[in-house]
Image (tube, rainbow, N blue to C red):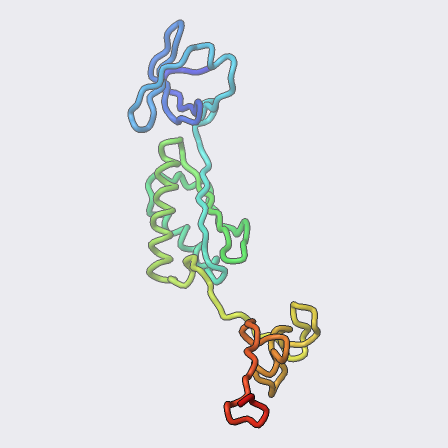
Length: 207
């Protein structure tokens, strides 16, 4: 099942089996916490034992980059980073584009190491050095928010209000002012028109 020194993942916690008794086991996590678990846990629930069989591990590092990122150059840079990393066991590596979104593409780097401790070191080394290299050598490849002005509506396109014209229905026709467009039913600002009184000297005015 498990042995002292095995690297396991239980309840989402990664650690090493430190003590085994008849009733419980102690798992020492990477941040030096101790988790005590009953033996029955390991016989009734699934868990990961990274030390079972060969301790060799394969790790993955994801990058979110711009669509213009130089993938071939990133692949060459990954090889240079791994050659300088003592934790890499030299078995395998690779870099491919695995997904894309409207703003970025996802690049996956695959690396190997002799055990779980070394695979962690290789992954964080590749992530840190690749981002630094992109920032210095290819800053355009880092993800960014793309903004652009909206394209103008071509002449003659139907308007969204269904009139079939580019002018909105509430706008007055060309050459007609807002007051004239309101007419007898109202002014351009929506208020009722004021009736004009005749001047005092008008012949029809009562004396």
